[in-house]
Image (cartoon, rainbow, N blue to C red; front, top):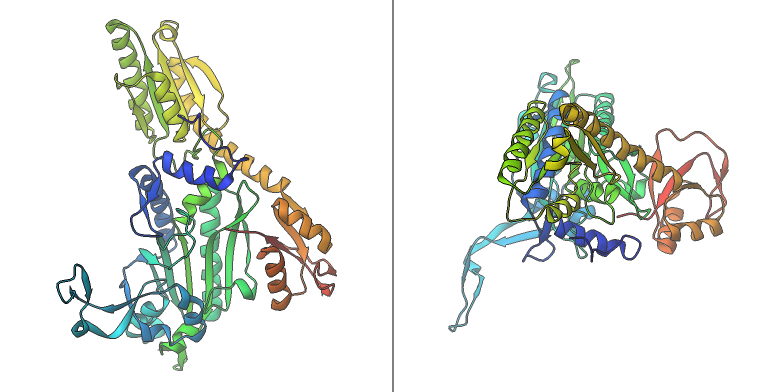
Length: 491
């Protein structure tokens, strides 16, 4: 199946796009810039949702749902917010169409159905949610409000790529309200840690936690915290963000509460989110020239069993063994498929499940079975081993755990080997062409950051939380700097 599959080294972008389609994850839609997430791809997203949702609820959050349409005037209440999203907004102007005049084919907006106020199709929900919170919050007893919603959003992108950047995408967005600045900052960092844990423990992707520079900050936030991951082409991908919004939205929408001291005060806010962009991160971090590679924690299908036999007698023995292994693994919570379809050859099945990234393949051949053996194949490193059938189920459980750890270790080793300390502008311009994370001194000014971006297309991905104090000179301006930040080209 993968014989004519584009290799990463030949054309990374084409490799990615082909993989997304041929692994049945998604396909381009008839609507420009939008995608259809196919059942196999959506099954991965569902596992992501389930894991994250469980963690959100464990930290006290509840799910709610807010309108898709937002009055245009709401966006205009928070100046920085509207400026940040203005170019990406889709706008509804009419609520009805009518046939064109003079017998022309087609439809056009009905002038009698023009909306009194234009509606923005949700690019993010801070404005509609904070207008709602005004009616929910009067006293300190009403705080904190800890809400999350799973939804779709629309941001009109000119250049799109499935999962990474589409006009419509799926995500979750948490929006919380607090009595104090300290509580809101604590919430912001707590949720970033949830994202980091999910990325590393479920996605097997090592991430760097840090704070965004002012240029890269979310529109309307006082601080944006992020997790940054490295893809196999050396580019960065922002895998999650958590924003400390201060009192900006509370003031814009007049959300006040009576404190314990009987004073009227504005509420403190946070918002945080991850999206189907995580699917892109998952694909680009682990997959190879043979197709998709999935960590067992998120694989819709963790084990596939493929039979090989010639006679009816052999088939019955193989079937019995396969069903026993399948039921034992399912009892342990592992998803298994026994593919005993007779209209597909075993070689085709091997290629199919390898390309789709199923972590473990079990081959039960009649000859091996006579010796009490079955063959196991790992997708992560493409190795095979023959084991006793009586130990198969326990061994597969351990194997899945080992694959999960191996994928994380491999990704971490790749990131470490593609992270460089750079001290001169010449070295910076040379290394950025090769990719990777560049640890550099920066003078802290937006002007310098913007010039670096203009000249190299590299941005400050984050100022790492664990960055140590270190005196140095900015690679661009030569001005003093007290710590290194991470520069990279990014998706």
